[in-house]
Length: 425
Image (cartoon, rainbow, N blue to C red; front, top):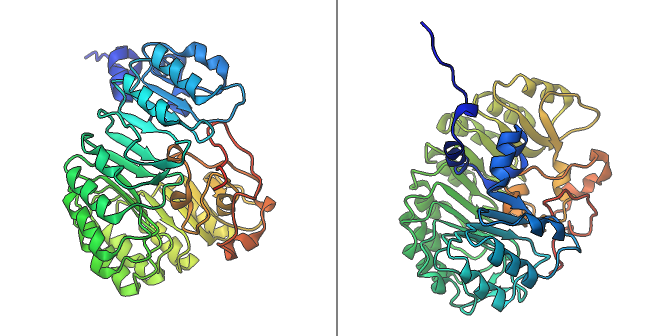
């Protein structure tokens, strides 16, 4: 019998673009576009990264995603940038602009002309978002990069938020207003990132209403105790769960949290917690299909960490500041799924793994001044699923890991074309 074998190359362009719509736009631009000329053409017919003023010529009506994520003096003021986008790409759905091109009040109002805009990730010149900051009613994915002032969250009542993320300088909010915001948008929310330095156990209860959440990232949770974990573990649809800085969640409380984790979680971050070797067995038993694990500033020993990795056959990425010896790294090479490893080590290592040094997290000026690992410290939302810029391991003093109060912004680092320095606060 003859069978007609078909590949993705045989699919019509419309169907390929439909498949691409389920993939992160930055990943499409950085990775998928390099697969072949056809994919490159299809992707860049919808997505463009503006790196200099010359790229304004590439703007056209079919564009759906625009990234302006690198510093170039040839790119003119934000007013010029916004006017070009509105005039040449009126069907735009996603707009991302870094902190070097902040928007003023009039720029935010001008964005109302982009009636198809759904995702917005920009910075404000005044570094404060309040009731006067205009956000298009059609936007359902918002990255908040600035301080949230009184009544800003209330002004988003017309938006049906599916994604809400606090990055950049956005560290604080009025807890009462956040309660109302989450309650109003609970049915639509799928992806949520909060800075929780002021949230108590009682405040976490509102999360129980967000039953459709698939990704929940709660960074810096110093007041969370075992009495506040119930709403979090009740979210059975969760696939990504990050909870960092839980200094009050003692060993027993953490063990209870691990034992009640939603079974679909495949991306877990427990950095800055009391996690130690005694918790490894419970984690392996509860989440045997875990694919991504981040453990920074924890008490786990290297032998227990290796044993945990062996008990997680689907683990593809391990991110930790634990120092591993060369034989242990070689042992992880034999892991059936592991491809990416970030850790500390000494000496020269030749490995088939994508191996990076945890010291590099402290070299990036695009990171925060905390000590809860790379995910919690990222300054830009669009770097969340992207690799950090690499440097020679010997370029940084090891004392950094013992001094979390040291500022990262004063340490020079190379930049790639989508990461830019943090502005001084």
